[in-house]
Length: 141
Ligand code: FES
Image 1 (tube, rainbow, N blue to C red):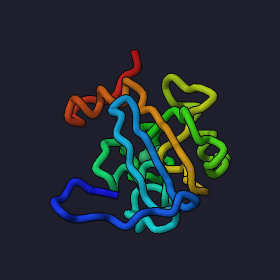
Image 2 (cartoon, helix red, strand yellow):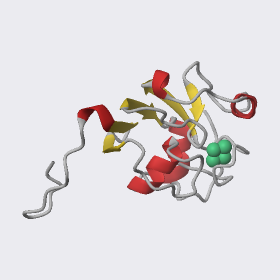
Image 3 (cartoon, rainbow, N blue to C red):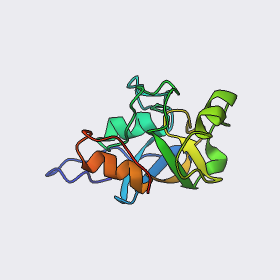
Image 4 (tube, helix red, strand yellow):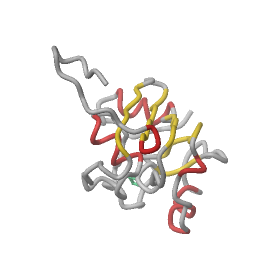
């Protein structure tokens, strides 16, 4: 798989081990081999927050990924069946999230449990928070 570097080629990832995550609305897609992402200590290992942090994608995480806020709230558009089940503490926290939907998860708690395609959307109010340079509190409209 070409990586854009002159003459350099990354090793191909076997299809059955490929994880592909698309972050909306930015539309950035990242790929990696299942189980090989080194844990970056942001949220649970191989959570959406962990993946985002590895790949330079802004996903707010005010509590550092310890399930103590809702700033990492995402909507899972595709691949929900491949994620870890939400535990009670995540469900309790999600009840406090703005604009909660049936596909809501906390990015720091939703762990990619198997290879496949995943699409998550970062809610607009959270994106606003990022675009404001993290100086203002997130406010849903
Ligand atoms: S970063 Fe605070 S709950 Fe996920």
